[in-house]
Image (cartoon, rainbow, N blue to C red):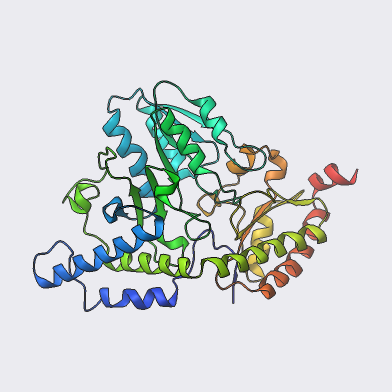
Length: 391
């Protein structure tokens, strides 16, 4: 049986979520755009899910929630959809951060090839992007700022409200990727003053294949998916009613259990960091202070390869990550760690432990007992570790 400690990559669907979804796979299977009663029932269900999500993300209107296939689509839609509308000929300047998820970095690279200018602000060594750095990067033609709310590898939580104030002062729109943060730290779109935000269901015990784009009313936008005109002509395609129900229910549960569960997760996170750094010398958390997610323990275990630790832990029944799951097939060091100043040879030894709803203290204790001898063996065989710390 695998002890799953990679909840930042994905989460199992909660049984309460699955129960809410089941009728919409079978009896209530109507197309929400059909005019007969089965379709009208599906439409009412879809709108109820939209209203629930809008309430729980702090949207002022349910219509500000657009259902998508997930966080990547939401990010692409936000960046490309807005810029296609407000600066269709190119020439606009976009500010982002160097440690964004690839769902932001890749669309930005595409926009650069199509005539837009992009500035990537480096986060500080504490893992955060600050409003003053965004201000310093502003230009007269800056039209969009996009900075993630919480980083998916190190867990740093940024002050998006302060960054949004800077963006708006200079006449730019503000987008944030909130895929990792929703349900784990406070989030209120209206209070934060943002124009766009991206979400994904499968990070919060909902189903894969459903997400949302928050778009403040009045935001100019050219949809990137065209067709039947669903979602008020902002995202074509037959809506995933069962997925929307599951997403809404998952978010409701996250908010109902917000205080107690996040306190429990933070205690597990801290236990993992404290035990591993105490047992293994030349080991530290990549960040261990400031605003951060309650469930991510990001570790730098010097002198070993993260992939070697991951595979040996997997053989013992533990699932962890060396960073973002979307790039874990690569042997390149994490761009996130490099961006906050971690040396390349150290970044190779990253280990991300992310705890979740089913994690226990025993899981953490057992992981530590498994990890320590693995690292000791790897270091004993490592000329890099010998050269760095034993000479």
